[in-house]
Each structure stands twice: as structure tokens, then as C-alpha cells.
Length: 158
Picture 1: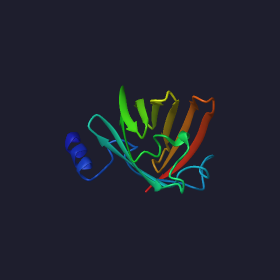
Picture 2 (picture 1 turned 90 degrees about the vertical axis):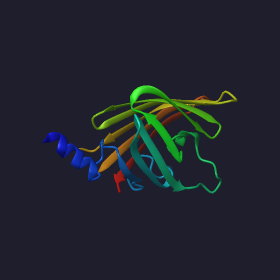
Picture 3 (picture 1 turned 180 degrees about the vertical axis):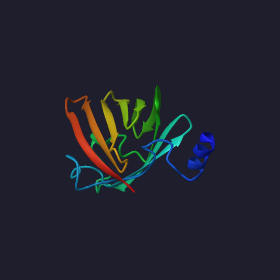
Picture 4 (picture 1 turned 45 degrees about the vertical axis):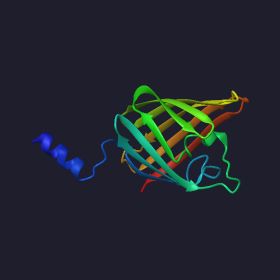
């Protein structure tokens, strides 16, 4: 009986984990909403043994965005969720990450390096609100030129 209920929930489109779904950046909330990607939307899907994050956003006029947003502003990003390494190519950067899920918390440790030796390393901490309607994304890290990254973005479920 329980197995049947689980199958019916999946068939009805119930997310397989709390992060799965469409998320919209709340531009009025979070410590970094003002300088974050404009009109950012992310769709998180369970795919294979991990997650696929598809992002849409308004392109900056210059066509360039700050290095601190590397990975966040990727049109498509694959993450493993079992702690194994996942590699994505993001422009000139090789992006290597390890992600773990623990209930309403998802932590991704990552490093991105280009052929010229520049790199940025950091951590994304995604946390769901108790009702699952909001997601906080903390972006922390260090760029090879010494700059630090410490941003918080708030998303609401679409």
C-alpha cells in the first residue's frame, strides 16, 4: 500500500526531493539581491544520480558577469549528490564540484580553474524553509587574486 502511494505521488508530479522545482530570485530579499543576476530563474531537476540546474537570467549589458556568479549563472549545471566529483565546463573554466544532500540542506564544494591558472573556489549552501516555499543560497569563496565572496540570495518557489 505504501509503495503504491509513493508511485502515485511521483506520477502526480510531486518533487522527489525538496529542491526539485522552479525557483525565482527574490530581488527584494537577501543581502546580495541588488548586485545579483537580474531576473534569475532556476529549475532544479533530479536526473540520473544527481541534479541538473537550468538557469535563465537577463544578460548583463557588457555580456560579462562577475566571477563570483560562476556556476550560478550557468545555463545548465550538473551536480552529483552523493559526494562524488562532477565536472562541468563553464566558458573558459573547468568547474569541479562535490555536492551532498542532508534533508533541507544541500552543500556544494567547488573549484573552477582556467588554462591561465586563475581560479576561484568556494561553497554553495542551499537551505529550504520549513514549508519548502523559499530557498536560501549562500555563496562563499575566494578568488585567486585574493578577493572574497560572501553573498546570500533568496529564492521563492514558482
